[in-house]
Image (cartoon, rainbow, N blue to C red):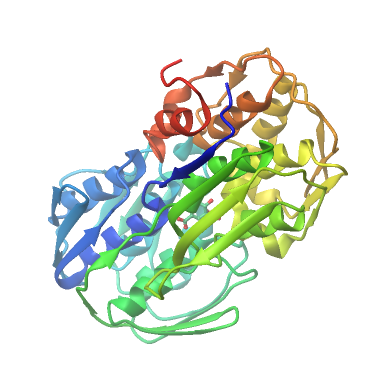
Length: 423
Ligand code: S3P
């Protein structure tokens, strides 16, 4: 049952930033303390790969200490490096490994073995990297080689690809420039600057000169993607007020908040003091929504939140059209397809147009059928939100996939939105 009182929620630390903090601290000179790191299956995979290359990472409550080995201090791993099911781990590590003097193999499991890797292997090859793959998929075999700074025009709007190139560029001879097609999250750029890299940016352009990094402590804000199901649920529950504390507000990640506001949601953002990554509190009030049109250039800032936005749109007063959704096909599941499957299960209608997702408004979530998660944490979380609003209960099949990014998701969600936990 839904409570309609004021609630306060603190999201877990940001996964995307933690991957980058681990990798960059590993090749910096000196010790870095990462405070409030994300602890989940994906970031554990990144840590394990770095440890296998001789990096010492020690954990204490709310902290990780990384003994940086410097750019040239990694050692050849004794076997394949396993990225688990993390696309960010695999793509960023591919960039790091491309610049090493030793050979390595990067592998993974489950859906990661089906996800496209040519998008990183090709630009890295243009810098001189020797990467062979299995038809553009993992495992990736990376031969140690010298890299040359190159100018890149990114074909896909992907922060993972951009970050892989930046990591390789640290090792290249001469500067590297990148022009993005659409603006994406800039966590890597911010951290590189923080650790003393010679990087400059303007608009869609980036320029990095190779060089060493100097260790400096890193504080990770709350994960806005983890908070997203809470934001959407609170938005859709009349009379609800949810205060979200200490959440990351990187402009490359706040698209969901902008979209919901454009739909008429009552959301107040209270930015905190300036920091490496912007962060603050977000207050969400339950309210009615109207449909919205989302442009392709807005999509990267809400890429992981689109199933939730689609769900919110189904109950809005008019139609919603989200354009530029093609990248959804390459997530933990084909998220365009699996969002439509989830909709079907819930008794909702949505259709795909040319690179767009069209959601009719004024629909009611019927529920009553078990919802498949397709081993995709974001689909599982959208199903949980749907379950709160559905006329009949929604049983979630395979809820354990939330361990990928947010192991305590269901506990936290029940605490905020259900009268009894464990019920
Ligand atoms: C991420 C970037 C996005 C996002 C993923 C995390 C990152 O992927 O979907 O969950 O940490 O850089 P793409 O870069 O492939 O769009």
